[in-house]
Image 1: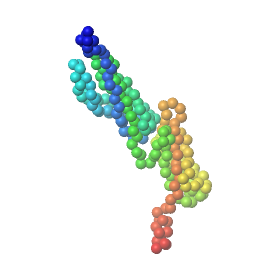
Image 2 (image 1 turned 90 degrees about the horizontal axis):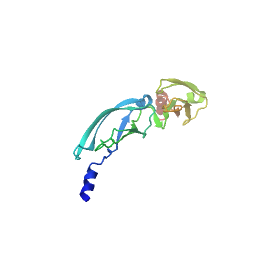
Image 3 (image 1 turned 30 degrees about the vertical axis):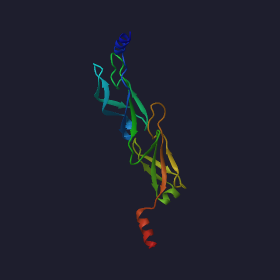
Image 4 (image 1 turned 90 degrees about the vertical axis):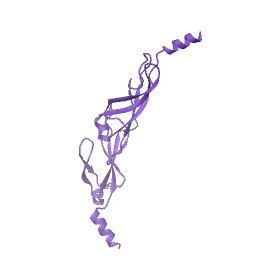
Length: 187
């Protein structure tokens, strides 16, 4: 009786294993969407039930507006099923590489905006880089250091709904020539 149960179990369909991999992409790729090459190896059962290593190589489409830490499910791209079982899934963890200008929080972007003291005190119009191209930002008179100026809808897109915002965080800086003259005056 036990022998018959063992033979039946050997013929049972088994689903493939689910796996996770991380894809590191740039902020620009997250903004536009991209296609990434995935190359990895997974443990897998061959036709005789022996465990082997199998190489996986394919391209995966990353939709625009993904965020750091987001997980995408690629159905059927995990381990192969055994005896007719369904293939497992591959979970793709999105990692955003650090960007030289922007910090990311969800779909919102932040950048440092250096202003001379007179620009902050009197107001100014400043060119700001965004992922969609430059925009002109009107800095109101009396702007304080640390203040965040919002540029609506210039953050990362969302799969549904309005894109995030871009925030320019004000930093008051002395121009280099003036800083050098002040330094010499104190010597």
